[in-house]
Image (cartoon, rainbow, N blue to C red; front, side, top):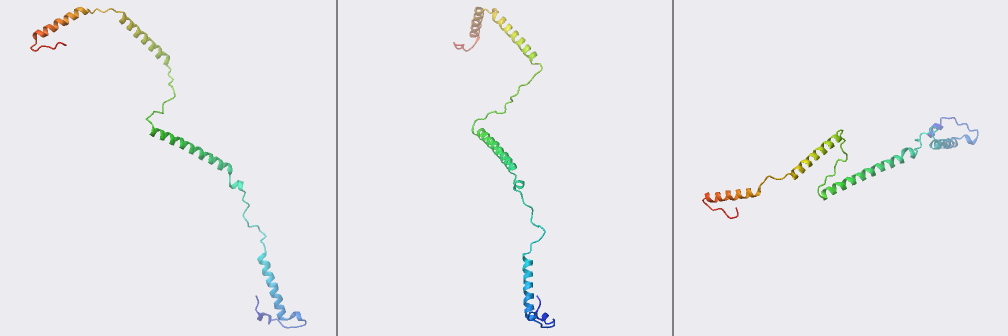
Length: 164
């Protein structure tokens, strides 16, 4: 703001009361304050605010829902595994990894026919053995055994027990 000495530089020609220095200084100060006030409340012509944030672009609810389902599925599988481990530690040892598939052999029929042929041959041999009469003479064997026991008894120094 101008000092009071600046106003003394102007010539003082007083033709009316409005041209006095004190009054001019008061008017100038009022205009200056009005101007400063208008500068402070002035708004910029260019919009410098950030763009409006749309919540559906930032917060993606379908993605959050998918993540929650995935986390729930993982937790469920973890619980199942923990239960299996706990039951394995609690109970007796069990084999739970049996192969549920069957081998598909190309020569299964031939092997089955061979097995049937061998089975029939074995049954025929068993029948022939069952039908066969023995040539074993039990009476001759018994007498031979008694003779050998008598010879042993006669030749031994110590007597044999009765049950032998």
